[in-house]
Length: 452
Image (cartoon, rainbow, N blue to C red):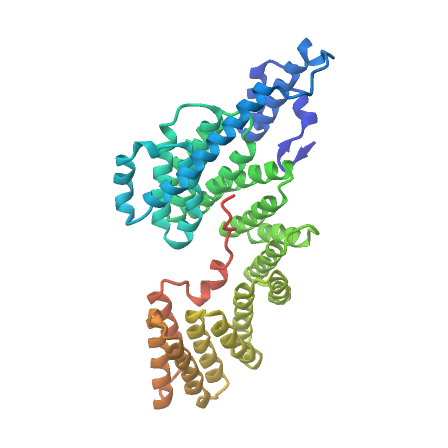
């Protein structure tokens, strides 16, 4: 029997009595890393079961030996001391500009400990959100330290984790070729360990992120499938669902809309799926319906996604999904309904502090008013957005303010047209490096940000 394109244990058991090289003659086993690892694990177990010591019924004492307890307490204390010192050292190391970090580390060779590597890895989460280039340099330092530590199983795993984090940081900043090299280094560490299936699955998911970004869809899909299977075996439901969502997004990227739709609808219908994954799956399914021309089904799915985002407490995602739905209503010439939604969205985006969206919705309102022949309302809509920018002192949103102000002046002069609104939207999106409205739905179909 086949499960998700992999052999199950019953099929693999048939290879146990065959010579080791017999598996290479099977097309699937020769190319599937997961099935090869599973078969090797079964072989190792079979060898152990044949050893007499396994069946020895000799009773072992459950009383802890004093010398063992003393050793474990010493290890625990050593790790605690190392962690406490590393906490101080990482704060000193990462103070100042990142260009100075390497020199500081070079001046303090005593800082090069496993504890510091762990602290640097922990720092990457914050750095990714605030300053991604910092994360790239932090992981470079972590890898440099880890590669120089005395070898042990714990250090091998730590090296793998450091290189994994570096791969993730590099792909996040768009350095895809370097990311794949870092992930290959991580994999070379993990494969030295007796048990590292979960780590390799997380690595496969990040590799798939890179492949997808490079439009290597046929390389990404097997990596996602393999990762999802391992997560399922480990009972890691959260990552399994994240992998399925990413599978749908990757199929979409490859213009395989029907297949993507099936994946997203199946995920949305699972009882145990977390609210955020259900909401995202429904939104993505709606976008797929839109791509294949089933607009009524798309609208129904968008409505379900809006409700699901509200249940999940993801209010900015809820607002953006409502925005996409309103734009569909515009395409269907349902301007009254769209205008009502745009007005509500204007207020929601203000409350959420999403200044660029406030400007874009003002343009949407103007477009709908012009389509309905209500030219007089355009200037009022623009003034409302301008008042928001002035009140919030949003100097960082200069492009948005310029677009809305220009439109307001044109409306007052009686020169506003739908073509002008479209041109202003295009100029604003270019200035802010955002996707244009005709590709907004495609860009909103994002993979999960969890690194795996």
